[in-house]
Image 1 (cartoon, rainbow, N blue to C red):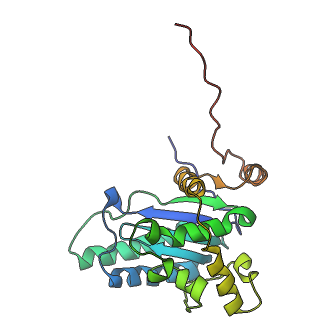
Image 2 (cartoon, rainbow, N blue to C red):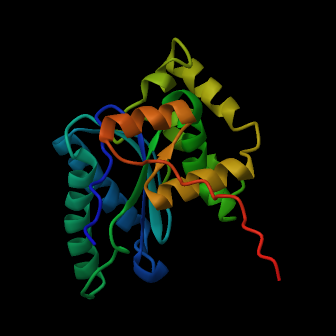
Image 3 (cartoon, one colour):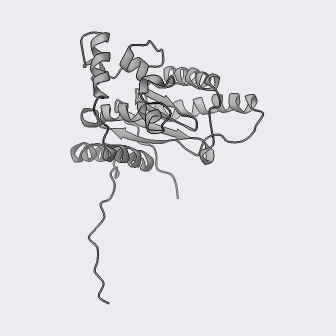
Length: 230
């Protein structure tokens, strides 16, 4: 069965996840993560992708991005994959694949879900019990979004810019988003939607995307249980 073409409408944010093959590590050192960040930045510039948030974990990565050109996200990930895998295999004297098949992704409705995705991504190390607060983890975008640390990798989303009139005000209001607990239901919804390549949004947004791309983009609701007489 042929694989479906990825959903990649221009200007709509996407949550992207890529995991190491069989759950194996894809980063073994800070240097590895720095190399990945370098190639990611190169690819984003080359193919026209705005990167709003990221986290590099030991065996997977999360990104929140917006494509500005056709097929930009796929081209970016392919470019990073080629260059980083070549570096990783050479460095650790290994051969073969590093990533677990194609990356996973979902479209994200800006008004309702964008900042949920920001938090979901940057709280990954906290959920993994690696740190107690996202500011303690170097390889995420929290320090840029929440603390004003400059990063060439980041392009602030317009919704982030709208948080305030100055960089300091935006960072302060962004930090305040993390004062509230990220509901477990939201975490599961983001994870499931991304895994299935669907759309993270309300019914109106999902219907609009379905009309735009011409195919189903939301999960099929289970039908009523059929009672069988014994």
